[in-house]
Image: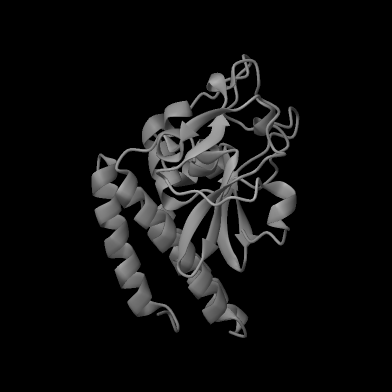
Length: 224
């Protein structure tokens, strides 16, 4: 999701790599779950997020949608899933009564990096610290450790590949007839989400994803 904001107003003005120290530590968010409320449709789920969640819950993508844990929305011209805000409580469906996450081990990438964000430029990306998003007193921690993600090099490659695939696809679809747009949206949704992945671990997921991405680039319009 593209955001048109002044970085000087929302960050500390620095760009971080996974090897940098950043003031993101929150003492395990004890006593706080503010970021799990009023997130509306901002927690967009990438294919790895859905892979993790469906295995943690022993379910599939369609069930995530059917049970109200996630929903579909158009993001920059592409239909993508996001965590669904619960209308009665105004918080994430996975937040329990104690204010803790029921799927913490499988939480989405956006949740893992908060209050960090990603800044994309020149076909790569770095991290930024959003200084006005979290009320907790922050301690210094290495970015890579804060992300709490196994196979970090493969993960960072996946994040960049997925982002720029969607960006290129959205650009390719500009001015395309509505029927083609719809067919492409359905293809992306089925291929990268609904069809699932047969691998039992994340190492296998990355291999499967790379294969799907390579095939998609040969089938979809005007992709580099």
